[in-house]
Image (tube, rainbow, N blue to C red; front, side, top):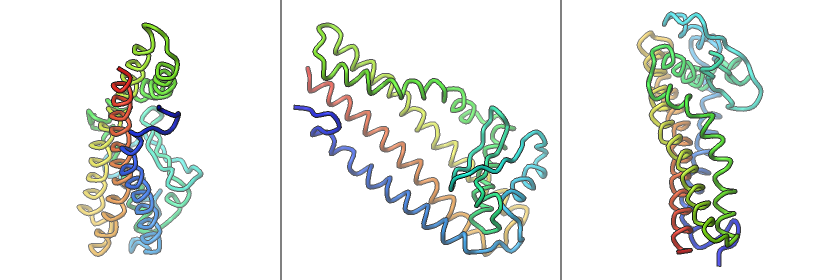
Length: 232
């Protein structure tokens, strides 16, 4: 018998959960390590972000300092790079690498990178679908409504599939932003040669969190399908 929050298929999520916890630990550990390495150029993350945008002719994007730790992101709707205080004011290799990554998204937007446009376009819809997916699925699972239970479960699975697609689209978007960041930091001598490995280490660690999120979503979808099939 299936219990809310636990059933035999829950074991599918265990590897992804451990991977996600390891990825989070990895990014925090790497960030802490490289935050102690002051960049030779003495620039803060905010200054580096502004410099990269200036060099690439981007003049319509604002930089805004926000609270939280590693809450950095670029909002294409408002054309604003949000940098957490530690990144915006920090002058470490970690701060510069994270800021450059967010500007990587700015460059994607400016150059019409298709995957970013697709992700931004479907994000509001995916958010609504993800919120509705599990309630619909579990209503169909736990309430034996003739002619409706299966439909509700199938609808929940369909809606959650949108979240999986979103996570899969996010992977190339984030990888490409990091690639652009490294190009901007290295081709123009923005960081010293000996700092490149450290910057890449920060970006690679951050990328693991997106891989973990995609893996968790995909396995969760498989779990829902298996639960539905067990009711047949």
